[in-house]
Amino acid sequence: MPDPRHDPVIFDPEGGIARLRAIMAALRDPAGGCPWDLAQTFATIAPYTLEEAHEVADAIDRAAWGEMPGELGDLLLKVVYHAQMSQEAGLFGFYDVVRGISDKMVARHPHVFGSESRDKSPDQQTRDWEALKARERGRAGVLDGVALGLPALTRAVKLQSRAARVGFDWPDVAQVVDKVAEEAGELVEARDSLGPEALTEEFGDLMFVMANLARHLKIDPEAALRQANSKFTRRFAHIEARLAQQGLTPADSTLEAMDALWNEARAADKLRR
Image (cartoon, rainbow, N blue to C red; front, side, top):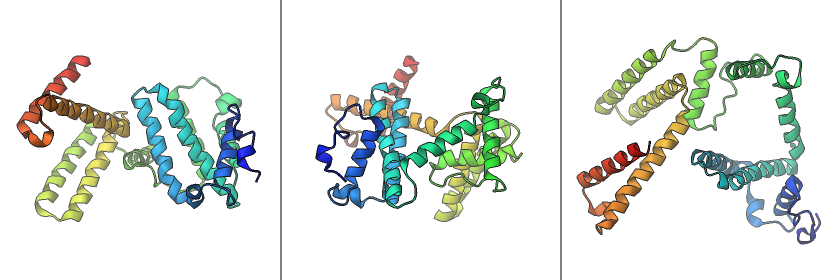
């Protein structure tokens, strides 16, 4: 390929996606690319892809709109990265990715691009979308195609949603709550009488039914847990700040003192609501 130091596309601020693809091709050029980029594979880039997607979600949760262009750019880079490696391997190229998703969007929106009525609710459109996906899968199993690489809570909800569409579901929330209590009791029993493998299994069962409860309540469990993580981080930072005013660290303090400061942060959170 031409010397990237003299490629006008790479240095064109308005070069758009062509610029990004040229940069990636230069980074992966065996003759003069970056050693780190040349060493990467689909498997090594996959974790970064997931990480960048989570960072986009984190920016959205924090309403950090100023960070979004950078976070979305990082995620887009991973798409271009995978497409570049695929092209090198003779599998497919970037425009195959673009063509595939474009064709899919047109095919799955006949109410926008075809003759179907646009008079649909979001819920009806979701059902129609899933029906189209099912027809595309043909005779595949109900749970086939739910990606193994999804976050576990998200995958649990998707598996349960697929099963629910064919009638395998509790009819109301009360029964799911009862199941939560049952699984919690089994976890306590496993703690007291069974080994680590059984304890892990029972904990997994409880988490799975909690994901189902979130689905019935129309809550995204990943988003809910991210919010809980943020709340814990914020409140613990309050504990550290208040202790620092006394010349202390959490390690120097007592559980009782830290718990009192936690309750102080909790009360402040309630006032902000």
